[in-house]
Length: 104
Image 1 (tube, one colour):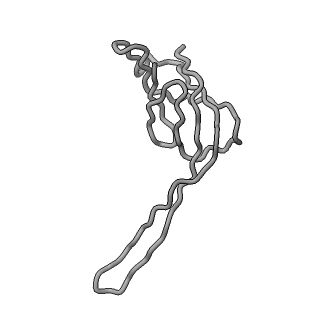
Image 2 (cartoon, rainbow, N blue to C red):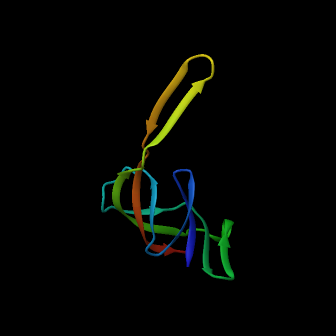
């Protein structure tokens, strides 16, 4: 059984025990959260719940860690104008462990 959820503007395919990295969530480590934005639930290979059939499906998860991603280097330049800029960015992340998928 797995579900497709949306959080932080991104979609993730999760099943029981999965650990995913999502955009930073405001709660401390160890907090149990409910991800209510479930797009689809696959119970068996031929059994799909999507759209209005999903209804009140939820994914329960536990926050395990707050971290930062690897640095991404952004380099801008304009040729023949002597314009060069280098900046870096590290995204704030939260690691979440899926503990339960509730369908109804």
